[in-house]
Image 1 (cartoon, rainbow, N blue to C red):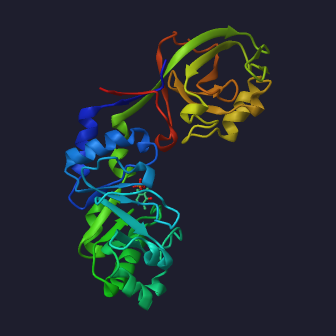
Image 2 (tube, rainbow, N blue to C red; image 1 turned 90 degrees about the vertical axis):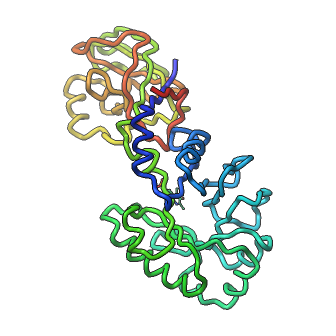
Image 3 (cartoon, protein in one colour; image 1 turned 45 degrees about the vertical axis):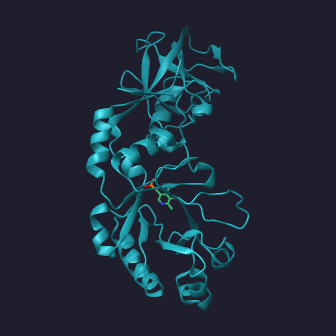
Length: 333
Ligand SMILES: *Cc1c(COP(=O)(O)O)cnc(C)c1O
């Protein structure tokens, strides 16, 4: 009785192909953007990627078919043995000195993100120069904020930091969060790491559906669930697949319950409505309220009597955040 991700294969692959160009380095990390890393690596190979990026050493595939960049910076406590296809990210001078000699390395330079990276001022450190000779230098890495206000600031910063870094040693510039069409504005030999924009760039190709597992009619004020809350009115309790183990949280990722929605629920006589949360499940075109917080693998929803309840076995829509959801199954339509 699964939480299912349906992928419209033709549409999804069309988006991948139209987004793809040779400068892109597909990113396959974490939960694989909901789609799973194995599938993302296979799609990357089909696109013709020479290099892919993974998040951690644990995510490096056992028999990589391409170059693999590990995005989490190498640290002296990393014990993983890596093959010749693996490129490390080094983000501190001290690590550049202690990483095994002849390792393949991109050096991360700190940006306005302030996450990891060697400070731009440290780039001219004499130890950096000499340490670069110990390793196989594969370029510079820059990671940028999401670009909420447009990408102009990221492009400017990338061009400036790239210029400073290339003055130290010339090499490819690996960047993120700039438009693929603007790489030329940053400089030559720029490679773009892309996850979300590639895999989730056409959300219409991906549909998430939960299965209705049970339906019960209830009267206003009756108690339900682990917490024995009183229901807000006459109607139905639906039990649907999808709970905390899938990453289904108390609030939908996009449309959180507004004050107005809560007020309406309260006004409609919900005894516990003040404590209710709008669920990510959609029935009859509307997001529905949780009857109580999601369970491990299922959620209890309250459906007012004005709505005809779905049947057991029917599928209903769910609005999830792909990077935090673990689907029971993926169906290629
Ligand atoms: C995750 C990550 C990316 C990809 O980010 P998206 O927003 O999914 O495209 C690129 N670079 C680094 C360093 C990352 O950690």
